[in-house]
Length: 206
Image (tube, rainbow, N blue to C red):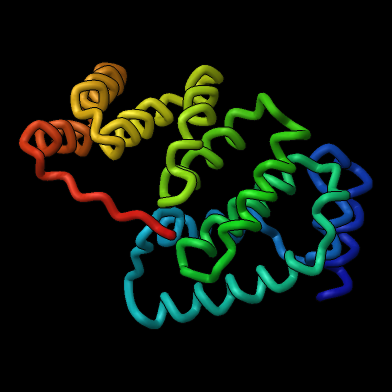
């Protein structure tokens, strides 16, 4: 079964070079599949798990993937899509306190050098930066660009950023603008009310 899987991966890289790379084959892990599986639990800080057992399982597997990624020379990677996925894995591992914050930054920068106008890369990098203490203010330009490229959720994040900076009026204004575009978003309504009554608490990773 493993040989069949490896053969299929080789076929993919030969047929779809714009999406799959040599790193994809060498890694022998489908990053997109893993991201889809675990992102509901670890894409934000602090992460949220259904149980201690799930936390242990996800942490263990993420560590394994990180070890494999660390063996690759991503500076020579020519697939922006692969780099975006790798950066997202590093960012989520950072949320697990695995010490991958610098690797996440490095990999997002590599991805954006290849695809500077990639809306997803700008948004994910902005979301990673906004979750940190050290680099939070750097997130603004990436979130603004993501929004200009069509990602509406970046507007919500920009509102959160302004609230975190203490700019209550501007933060509420951005959230209200987002709410106009998404009138059924009850969470945003509650957040605006909480901001107006000073009941918001921010959790940031390191």
